[in-house]
Length: 120
Length: 513
Image (cartoon, rainbow over all chains, first blue to last red; front, top):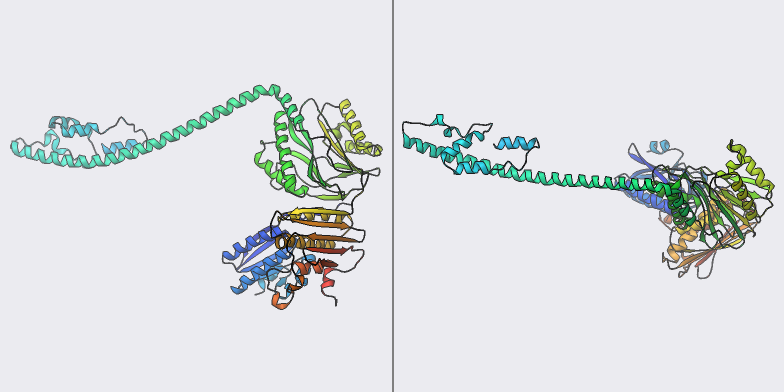
């Protein structure tokens, strides 16, 4: 009878410099508002001169087109600057999004952060 | 002299009585006076006054001696003038320092004055303590909300029984919209005026954030934040808060360390409880939100802890199960009768403050709901919070809920941003129908519409790098049907119940699998 419905759980983003890359660990919901927060953090990361970005989606429960749009915006900027954006461990519901939109053809998706960092 | 002044000033003991008037008079006066003053003019360096001392005088040639004296005097004047200039500089520095110091002293006295005022206030408060209880009681009474709230088919019953001492127990019924009632019961720690004041603050915070946020979890988090900033140190509250959709009869709730509310359903008594810490005490109170579907004739009972204690003063668990037995036995009673009988027990057995809030549903749950929102991005959450609990309660699983939320968010965001172009005088309407075998959501905006066939396919290679334009494709992928009206300012999306279709979004996207 009890059910979970928490669309307003905020998105938490932790950033960590690992080697020559910055790892963003997201947890929560990348909805309209989560995407805003993600946009801010991605901008700060790129403005700081970091164009090698790993986005860990392990704890992401929801994502809409706005979140995908932010990832693609970043993809275009880092590619132009010889960097990369790598996606780590999206859960099945989120992984579906990349498949349906065919973004998995452009984006490299890894099972773990270490795999993403080791793959040159 | 100057160096002495410096050392004095350095020691902080310099006062304005040391002026430069004496050396200046001495230099301009006759030699005898100069000599008399000279011992005062000591320096640590080479003494510049040698020529003025009697031992230095040359008696053999009076005029030469006069000349030498005049020369020495001239040197003396120059030296003193230089020292004077330095001293003047020093004076101005010292005056500046004095000015700063006296300002600091003034500031200190302001602090002292404030402290005096505070202690006076404390004294007055101590005197007022005698009247404390009476004042607190008045405050508590004044804050009591109307005992009836006007929602069709929902019966409310409330009771507060005053005890010997005023506690900060309170309830509230907040009309959030025509079809949403906020139910709240809470208790502030402690007794008396302070508890009553915190109660007033908390009630105000709940009322404010209940209209701004769209889920009990978000409301409690905002109240928690505001009380963390404002409340008197050491006071906190326990609270149970729920939002009742008075049409669909879904109830979303959070329990922040209060005693669990009870659902009385066909003779069964079920506690409604969640994780969550006190309100106004922790930065991260970890509120958990749950949601249930209520049915016709269901009753909810929210109350404060002394009601439980009445049933067994010793053991909390035993008291809880006795109360549950009592509720089970009287589960056929209308809610106002139940609360009336409980009040009689409280008045007879106890001298404590108790608050109770009950509802009874005299209507069946609706299958259709019309939601109207302003064109503000935040309002997407309001729609989701009205639709998802009902869909979830219907038995839709995680995957279907994800799909419905995604399609709804895409459609409502499009309507707000592209349809109404964020013009918040325009509205977005969501017609939501929950049938036994499908969910239908129609989203209408007041914009100019568009031509859906003109949209590029975002999954084509040349469009893959686009930063937008995936919303409608996602709606189509996740829903079983997506149809636009002719103007395309209205989109109707249907999701068949999972027990009705085995398709997953992935299978729909890749039909060959």
